[in-house]
Length: 462
Image 1 (cartoon, one colour):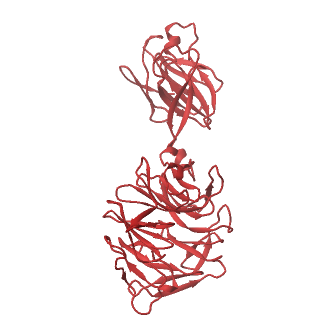
Image 2 (cartoon, one colour):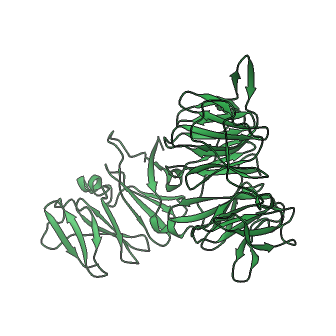
Image 3 (spheres, helix red, strand yellow):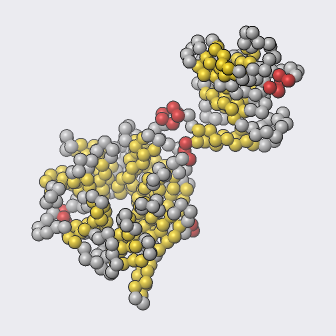
């Protein structure tokens, strides 16, 4: 074999839909690629499509070409370090709230200026398109624009409240508010934000509940520190375990979602690498990278459908389009003399094989169902057949009647039997070596096929 011809073969649609889980590849970015730190905590995408990454040493942005990082800013004559950013929330006006363990920051992404938010710790989140801050004692409404240090933050809770009894608000698909404590779930009144219902689960919380998530079916998922994940059943008021590859012995930090090829997957954050759970079947699959098992702190599906993972070993990227196709090398035979492009004209799959036809007289390539090369049929006619010898290898269409494979070519239709014999079929009323230039084969049913040729269409009964 002299050289290789590379083609892109789109994965068979039926096969894609039958797949429970996708085949993926990780691409990893670290501080060597421009990240502020390889230890990534949080991900977000702004209105312009920019990916923002909160790291152990400030924040980074990715514009599709390169990374730009921010680790500190000047305040007077001093330098303020951003530190470990575990929380970030982009705003529509170009502003962004950043949360670290030490303090809260406001970042104007347009002029790249920073301001201290005047609070320590807490959790920044979005509620009804408004930026909110959850502290241990209260919830605060955050302003969209900040142009000075320590702006005034509006507390939404007055008098005695239940804010210290649960974590941040989680909204279900109907607008109801939920939250959680160390070993209990709570339902919250929309107006007063007081607890209306409480469900305790001391025996299932492990070392504590870590987060809640509502999937596309409005089911409430619960993650735990050291005891896996559950789905809350409102009818029985119990937690039903979701069995995964590690059973119940792992840390789950929360959830994200990935919509891929028409399927919804629940992505479990935590120390089990990339763990996907099919929403329909609740079956799971874990994906490890080359360095082995890793912890995922956050996940983001961007506007193009790609998946990003914030991990302790860098920012991992999964290209959603890459899994739609597979690269198959097609060898060029030694008999190939011309310099024309070796284009693929037709692909056909039966129960055992893939048949790939290449034009410019290169014949037929046969692969098994796993795309392992089996055979090259370089010509459908004997070599001593003159001009037919060359043109008969120009296969332009492939079909099957269930037992035999049929190939359309220059001088007629060829039938490949199960015993490996090839027979040429010449239409009635045409000379044996008359050039017909048969192309596409379109079966209407078991007894009627339509075959295109240079002056019209043939009707063929296999």
